[in-house]
Image (cartoon, rainbow, N blue to C red; front, side, top):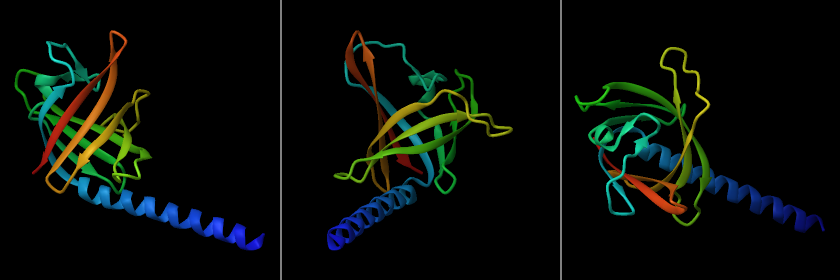
Length: 157
């Protein structure tokens, strides 16, 4: 009985260490400056989507993003002159890890720039692809009762 408990404890310990190693590697890769190149939708058509309760697709395309994973914070900057430009602060929290891909879902929450207080709203995003040069986020929402996926495609600067 003691051997079984010890074996279960050891297996649990090893699995938890493996997951944290994957997260650390992903955080190392995500660290730095990124450019949001394009945003696409799973369905064709014209949609009036406000991303992160902040701005339209047109405003977000061309925005720059900075990730600081050691404290799970970041800043994105809207650069399109036809939009409300400037920096926006956020925090992100890893929610769930896909053991097959090593990627994760996370929660992105806007913050107040002055005192870093987190707002009550958050956005669940799936890290669908991550390499040293490219990253893709996906957010699935419901439109007319059907799943609708928004894909945000980044490149590292």
